[in-house]
Length: 163
Image (cartoon, rainbow, N blue to C red; front, side, top):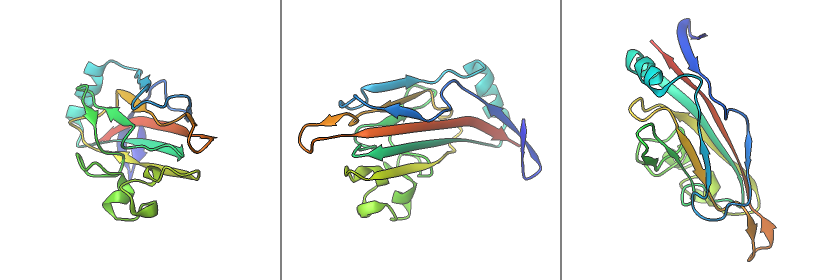
């Protein structure tokens, strides 16, 4: 347990908190990472139900790799989610897409599909779908048209609940 503005925060860790390379997975969602938490899903749901707020940080770093068309996260109900951290539920966007501040005017920074390192990150806060149970990515491998290797890195934080 940690503190957020003097309020106790319960943190639930998992085995995939470190920055992890996505490479060699070109097909949509072909990279798959199941998230294993340190307590059971029943215990997690009980904590979520007792909490006023919950959040989980999610980040994707891309180099020529497209995020939203080729990647997604999976809710605790097993649903493919179509938005990224910091964006509205079911918006189909990343946080920068909500403020029209993404590189190239796209819905996410990682939609430019160029050879520039970019990042989309933010907090997922919908208690009805948290925690993230799986990460899926694609468009991360050798590009035979542009002749460079497309790469990605994902980072998923602890689930944090309070009040």
